[in-house]
Amino acid sequence: MVLLTKGARGREGIYNAGKWFSYFLIIGLIAGCGSVLFHYLCQLGIHYFMDFMAGYRPTPPAGEHHLLVPTTRPFNRWILLFLPAMGGLVSGWLVYTFAPEAEGHGTDAAIDAYHNKGGFIRSRVPIIKTIASTITLTTGGSGGREGPIAQIGAGFASFLATRFNLSDRERRIMMAAGIGAGVGSIFRAPLAGALFASEVLYRDPEFESDVIIPAGISSVVAYCVYCLVFGWGSLFESPDFLFRNPLELGPYLVLAGVLVATGWFYVKVFYGTEKVFKNLTGVPNHLKPAMGGLCTGIIGFFFSHTLAFGYGFIQTALTTGLPITMLLTLAIGKIFTTSFSIGSGGSGGVFGPSVVIGGAMGGVVGQIFHQIMPGVVTAPGAFIIVGMAGFFTAVSNTPISTIIFVSEMTNSYHLLLPSLMVCSICYLMGQKFTIFENQVKTKVDSPAHAGEFMVDILQKIRVKDLMPAVKQVPHVHEEMGFLAFKRFFSETKQHYFPVMNKEERLVGIFSSTDIRSVIFLKEVEHLIVMRDIATTEIISTTPSEDLNAVLQKFTTKNIDSLPVVQEHDAGILIGMLERRDVIATYNRQVERMKTRG
Image (cartoon, rainbow, N blue to C red; front, side):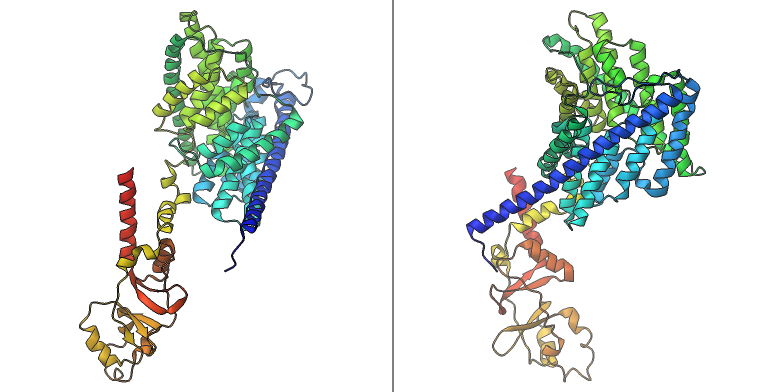
């Protein structure tokens, strides 16, 4: 073994840090470019489909602008009725022909890949997801941009990790960094993107610590790329709302209850719709998004503001205000249009609609309390911002990243206190349901971490720590005849027998199972010596080896005892180590940790 000097180890550490930084930099660049491309495609689609064909021009949020000059075509509800069905037909054919796993909301698919597929995503998925989502969302389908862009970043990161022959753990980390980069850039919220990528994986308030720094690097790079093209600033423009009256926490408490109830209804409708479409076994899969699109179009025929993204209506509610009836129809209608658009197999995200639904319900509650107690609730618009955060927390179990998300998206940091209270209550009351079905409860429940905790404990214990359990057992001489061994065997309970030569060096080993084939062959038993039965391919361990490696040797060959030999001389036998003693040591260590805890 080559021993590295302190300087060499330092250079190696710098090299590894530089290598990984370059990986995360590349992921950020690609995710940022993907966000730019996806935004361009969405702008073109809205212009040529919704504006040019139906004369429908939804206003964008303050941080975005139409890239093309709006047409003067008059608004046509009848085209808007069938347009989502046309988009669903095309996107459904694309998805189910080339990448069926690209259906639905992409963030949940990325979560599934993290926990169950070693972070592997087929390279074609981001491409199909981008095209299908663009068509779904720009023909009137209700959905968000985070799902597609999450799969774009995650898919490229997974491809990069696979090309570099990285381990499953490293691929998962890079994939999660791609999620953070994509989401952080498209919503202009780099810090929230990094936190979201590590928090959205679990239902409990738990972060994937390995992911935060990589996702942070990639998210910052992607955000810079996106803003260099489309300009700096937040997605929404918000008045400088302030929290100054503790009495206002009462209405915020009511808001939390309303958001949880609405979130429960949203999840039930979404997955109920998905179940209905999956049970339509007589209908080809690629036609189902068209059927969902038609249902969306029917709602949009009467309530056009429930179609597409809907961010512009929240922007209007923040700056000039909207009537309660319009906010209520926006929230409830958005629940159904999103469920039909994505639950039927269409392609899009669920974060964007959740922001709109939560903001609209927050506006409703804020305006009601403003009318009841204008001296306490002076700015109903503040309830829109807190409603955005609380609603998505209720349906996603991501309280921390969501608070940061909404603060960055609206450039409003003075509502952190009510947001924290509302999000905490929404999280506690909404733990029984989630819009992300592939979330697992904790790391212990994740297949990605299966066995890690046991491995961590076993790797800290060496064979030398178990020397009192290493047994001195009678050995067998290689020249011993089988008849003599039978007499010895009848007087012992030993199951594994080391075989020694004249110099008392270990040259073989056999078990009681190995002698079954000859124990009843009386015609040859006087001809056999124990050297003939023993195997010379000895699996052994040394005092310095950790118990995780020892346990792997036990399980690989399905053996129950290993010879312990000297460190630099495998011919000198120290004793035999039993599998049950290793497991007993692990159990004692776990109990010791629980006691200390």
